[in-house]
Every structure is written in structure tokens, then in C-alpha cells.
Length: 317
Ligand SMILES: Nc1ncnc2c1ncn2[C@@H]1O[C@H](COP(=O)(O)OP(=O)(O)OP(=O)(O)O)[C@@H](O)[C@H]1O
Ligand SMILES: [Mg+2]
Image (tube, rainbow, N blue to C red; front, side, top):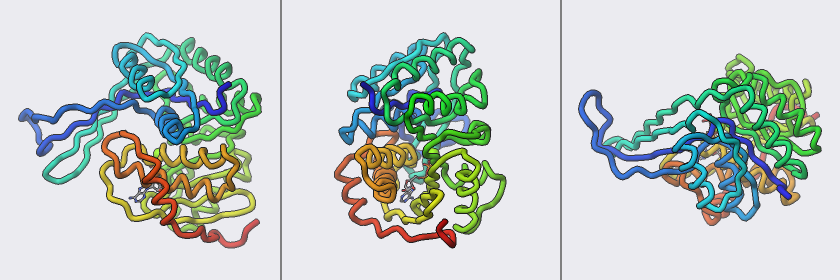
């Protein structure tokens, strides 16, 4: 039985390297590349497995890069089920610049999926998650996948009786109407979704409450980068700041946060404690290079440093 299943429609083989300075025209000699599995749902599954919570990753995979990705996922001990596609799984390229410590992230579009391949992914999700309590769908959608794809996923997951965690952005986020359990937008993504600046925390809570009131989701965990996160339900809205951490790489903080929050909820913790564990997991990910995994000891250390949640957004309903 698969208690937790993640879906990644646009996975990537993440390649990270280092060079002195990023410059035009001249060749830039780079350090040895590091290869990591990438893509929202795959990262969430990796962190959950690292934490001892078995999560099965479902994703389309094609070409040499797809096989390399599958191997890396298997090497980390993450169970996976894949749909073989004709296109090649994309590669993402991150260059760390030594002289400035700036990070350059080059993200390629994924391969175009055929309607049949999209249907196969949905079918594989339904069978893999038949007995699941939680499904996580995360990341962008590659060409060929309809914009309301995550609504179809939400309906399938509702029919299965599981809870859907969703982390996406842009048109696929705006296309949602119902059936998500927990939505994890970053502030940038929520702003773009509602088309407003959301400068104050009250504005942010109101935007989250509107999504809940319209039936899109039950919980919004709005991540605020260094400022931590606000979680909002129909009944409560609370803010918890993050901790000050050395930032080696921003890759994967949101995925790690989703994994940490789900880890807590899967173990029956209160939402507030689960979100707090998620904030610590997001912070822990920043200290690791590329999409290398954070470790439990860092998460526990940051979790212990976090201050209490404070109510926000005016009256609690
Ligand atoms: N600079 C930081 N310092 C401390 N913690 C951070 C920092 N950046 C991120 N975090 C932690 O990671 C979580 C997720 O980060 P963030 O809000 O940037 O989401 P994201 O999904 O990575 O963003 P996006 O999808 O827009 O790139 C935060 O809620 C926080 O807990
Ligand atoms: Mg994110």
C-alpha cells in the first residue's frame, strides 16, 4: 500500500556546477557536475523518505535523461512508478558563481506530452494512490498538459478519499475550482494568482480566505521566504517566522517545506506544529548545495529555534 504518493508532471535531471564568473562569449571552465533528481513532487518524496516516511513518486520519464533520473531516484531508495514517454525528460542547469556566490538557474521547458501520455499519468496516479491518505502534486506542467490538469487530479484524489497537497503557480493555479486539501503558494505565486500586491499580512490572509471560502482548498500555507509562513484555514490564521540560516542554494526550499508539513500531518500532529516543522525543513534545505537533501538533524535544530505562531489577519472566524 502507498500511503503517500507524489505526482511530478515536469520532472528534471538537475545538474549543478561551479565557475569563477559567468561571462558572455568566452568558455567558462566549470567544476565537476553534480546530478540530482529534480521536480517538485520528486523532491517532496525524497525529503519524506529521508525522514522515514515512505512516499512513492509518480512521474513521466523519457530518453537518456529520464533513465538517469530514474536511477538517481532509485539510488536514494525512493520508490517510484513511471510512465514511459517518447520525449526526453528535461535537464535543469544551475551554475554557482564563485567570485560573487550568486547562483544562476537555467530552467528548460519539459518535453511535449501526448494526450495519451497525459491519460496514462492520470491512470497510474489513480492505481498507485488507490489506498493513499495523501497525494502531493507539485510543479509546473510541461507542454501538452491541459491547464486544468490539477483540477482533474483534485477530482480523482477526492474520489479516492485522499487529501491533496498542491504546489503550483501561474495558469494551472488559477484554473483550480475545488477539492484541494492544502495549497502551498509562495507569496509571489499568490500575488500572481489573485492579481493584487498583497502588501500587508491582512491582505495576504484575506486572499487565502477567499480561496478557502470559494471551495478551492481547506488550508493555505503561504510561504514567505525568510519571513517564514502564514497558515490559514476557515477558523484560524497564524504566522510563524523562519530562522536565520546560511543560504547556500534556494533550490528546493518550498518542496522541503511541503514535505515537512505533510510529515507532521501524516503523523497526526496539529496543523500549526506540522507547518512549523515544514518551515524548519524549508530553512534546512537552504544550507545544502543544489538539490542535495537536507538532513533531519538540521530540521530538528531549526524546529527547536522557531518562535511561537502568532494570530494574524484580524478576527478569527
Ligand atoms: N532566506 C530564508 N531564510 C530562512 N528560511 C527560508 C528562507 N527562504 C526560504 N525559507 C524557508 O523555506 C520556506 C519556503 O521558501 P519560499 O517561501 O521561498 O518558497 P518557495 O516555494 O521555495 O518559493 P518559490 O516557489 O516562489 O520559488 C519558507 O517558508 C521558509 O521556511
Ligand atoms: Mg515553490
